[in-house]
Image (cartoon, rainbow, N blue to C red; front, top):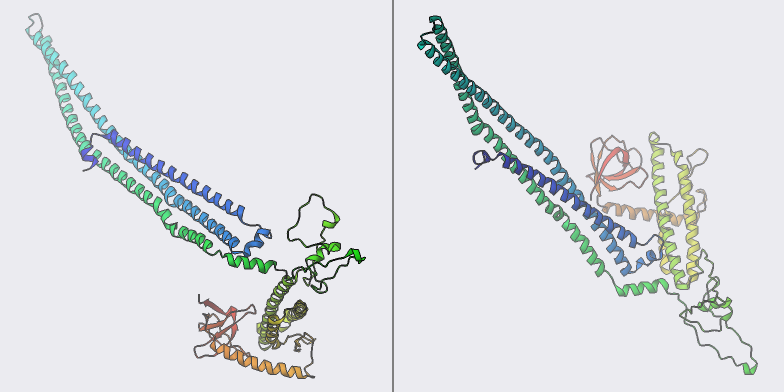
Length: 561
C-alpha cells in the first residue's frame, strides 16, 4: 500500500500530514533543548553547592580534614562535583546528538517537501492549462457549429424564397459552406485538444501525482525513523553515563564506610595532646601561723618551654586550674591571657606537640637534602661527560649550579643539626637520628665539583660541608673512601637487578666514548633502566646486558605503563 495508489485524491490530507510531522520534530527539538537547560542548571546548582560547602584554604575546616568524618564529607562533595559533571555531559550530548542533528535534518526535510509540493503544483497547473485549452476549443466548436447551422438554414430559406436572386442564393450557399468548413476545423481541433487533455490527465493521475505522493511518503517515513532514533538517543544518552554516576554514588557510600570513629578520636589526641602532667594537690596555707602565701614553681618543661597550663595564669598560680573556661562580659587583668611568642624551635608549644612539629620539620629538611644530593650527582655526571666530550657542552657552564647545590646542601645540613638538637632536647631522638645517619651515609659518596681559575680542579667536600685538600687526607677520608667503594659495589649489584621501565629508539648515532656512557646506532632499540633526572642523560641497557648513559635528546622514549 502506498499513498500514490490509495491516497491519489487526498492531496490536502497529505499536505497537512507532512506539515504536522515536521512540526512534531520541531516540538521534540524544543523539548530536548529545555531538558538540556534543566540539566545545565541542575549541574550549575550542584557545583555552586559543593563550592559553598568546600572549606576555604587555610581555614579551620580544612585543618579538621585529618578526621575521617570531615574527610568523608569532602569526598562526598568531590563525588557530587563529578556527578554534576556527568549531568553537564548529558546536556551536552543531547544538544549535539539530538537537537543539532534533528534541526539540521529538519531543514533538509522542509526543502525536500517544498520541492515535492512544487512539482505537484506544476503538474496541476499544466493539467489546468490543457483543460483551459480544451474548454476554449470546445466553446469555439460550439459557437462555430451554431453559426454554420444558421448559415445552412439561411441558405435553404434563401433558396426557397421566390424573390431571391440566383446570386443571393449562391452567396448564401457559399457562406453556409464556409461556416460548415470552419465548424469542421473547430471540431477537429476540439477532438485533438480532448485527446491531449485525456492523455495528460491520465499521466497526471496515474503517473505524476502518484510518484510525488510516494516521494512524500518516503520522506515522511524517513522523518518518522529519524525521530524514533532521537527518542532512543534521549534514553541512551543518559544510559551511557549511568555507570559513571553509579561510581559517583558508590564513592559517596564508600565515604560513609570510611568513617572510623576510633581513628578520629586517636587523631584528636595526637593533634592536641600537650604532654603536661595533671595539676597536683594544692598545699594547705595556714595563715594562722603567719606563713606567707608561697607559690611553688612547677618543674614541667624546660627553658623556653611553657611550664604547663598553670603558667598561663600568671600571678594567680595558686588558684585552681579549670578545664572549662568561664565566660564573662567584663575582661579584668586577671582574665587576660598573654599568648606565648612563636619561636623557631617551637618552644611555645606543649612538649608533645613540640616533638611532633620538630619531627615534621626534620622530615621536610631530609627530603629537601635528598633532592639536592640527587641534583649534585646528576651535575657531576654531566660535567664528566662534558669534559670527555667537549662538543656536547662546556664544563665551566656547570660551575654556578654545582656551587649553588653545594651551598644548599651545607645550609640544609646545618638546619638538620639544629633541629636534631632541639628534638633531642625535647626528649625524642631515636628514629630521627637513625634517619639522619642513613641520609649522611647516602651523601658521603658525593664529591662536589667546583672550579679553579682554569676550570678543571675537583675539590671534595667533607660530610660537615668543609673543604679538604686531596694532598692531606685524614683517617675520616679513608673511611669515607672505603664506604664509597662498598656503596658503589652495592649499587652495582642493585643495578643488575633493576627491571626495564620502557624502551627507546635512537634517532642519531652516539659514540659513547666517555666513561659511563654507551654507544648506539641510529634506529637501535634499547631498554630504559633509569629515567632522566633533569641532567639530560638516560640510563639504558642492551639485550646483552651492557648498560650505560646516553643523551636523552638523542632518543625517542616510550615508558611502560
